[in-house]
Length: 281
Image (cartoon, rainbow, N blue to C red; front, side):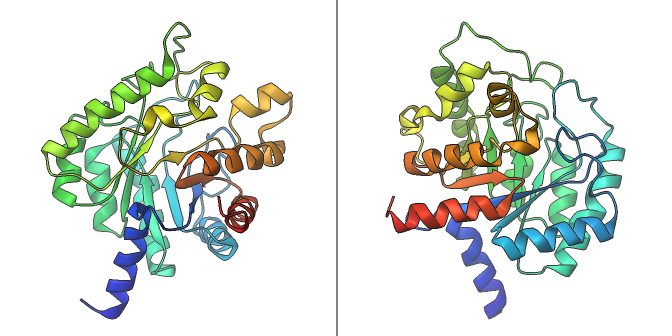
């Protein structure tokens, strides 16, 4: 293994180092219909320009997605997802060989193809529930896996269930899925409570109010609240006007123990991390 490969592997291992700094995951949506920036990065010139901007602003991970999971989104075919996703991953890897690339997909075959062309992390919004082959594929690929809570199907993922103890439900789901992954030898896991997926506004805020309900799960926590309706609806503003409020929530989440912040706006998130570091929180 070359010195460059060793340094790159060490960068990935920082995700699981409890003493490492909080990391920023920059979002690159290569979709025509994502809720915030759909259609903005559908050409190579545009996606590479955005990727370069996020890296320059301090993104530690670039999270590439090609299938919108906004409310009322239509599930595209595997062939269409591949057509959108794989060229982007290949292009970003070629132009930015030292950046950690995460791929936002819930399809096992897509995960495999993405890793083949340079992806390092699989970010599965379904927590392994949309594709029964996903966990086995992650075990085979031996790559870090982001396990997110979801309601169990693409069609139902935004159905709200307000009567539930949401913290208990999320923790129970993640615990059960972690046990399945561990049985397959998968231990490089990041947990995501799934803010904005099938939760009421009140439940979303309950999930990030503190993370004591996740303490029994010894894995780093990823939080994705960027430009979500839990902020814009609360403040009655557009999603792209929520950066200041999101920064406040990011500071709270970091103080509560979040390890990765998934964002559209990298620079403000990086500034929050620097301020929190100065406070030694």
